[in-house]
Length: 153
Image (cartoon, rainbow, N blue to C red; front, side):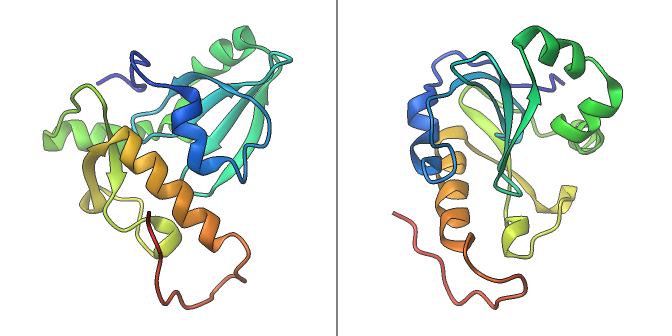
């Protein structure tokens, strides 16, 4: 199983629309994990990782070349691409089609676990949008706050 999704037909601006609250400057999508997490290049060439589970945008490399070198490291693959979980998924059988990613039935931000039993296949566009909307609503809540409801548009 590939550790990343082909970018054919994916638009950086469309995918980042519901993440504008976090991604405040222009970014270009250069890679995407099978879980919808994105590697984004900024105008100066720096590469950032948008983690959909934690809603964190972090700098990971000073250039695309440096990112590609780092992405070849087994530990970075485990961390960024969740390769251990991907191996479990591959053994269980579900495969992605074009425009799909693996998602979590109950997002970890809402108490779900990062485990095979909580994984399903979803539309990339829908999942990325959904996670952006959820995290936007949760971002100012103190840890441990009981969630009463989430509004999705």
